Figure 1 (cartoon, one colour):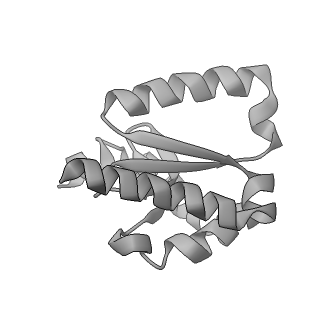
Figure 2: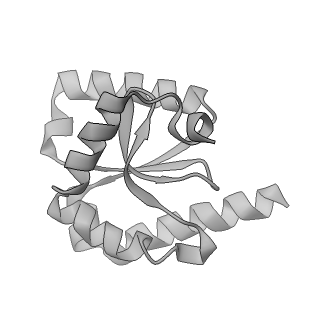
Figure 3: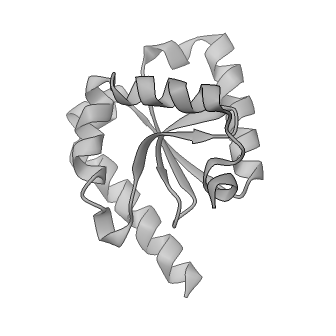
Amino acid sequence: MKKKMFYGASNLIFEKAKELRNNLTFAELVLWGYLKQNPLGHKFRRQHPLGIFIADFYCHSLKLVIEVDGNIHDTLEAKINDERREHIIKSEGLSILRFRNEEVQGSLEKVIEQIELFINTKTTLSR
């Protein structure tokens, strides 16, 4: 189970994830307020180790990663790293939803709609 759920993450990645869980950004904290309620019956984890990466939020039953990005992701270097990271994560059969801090803080309802649309679509296709 550990290997499947964490994709071989090292102890160092687990320690870093624990540190990040204790220091959520404001936008992550806002979204966590919704996700920790197990929307539509699905459990989400925050700052979850996935191999060499740490997902902001992860739902194992949906194979879904949710990322909340701040301005640091606007740099060319960050965009290249994000693309590389997305490619690796998707190669594991995971899906990714990516939101900006401003979306979460200013339009939480729309973010929730997109997450619930993904969940409903995924569960409908799984039947």
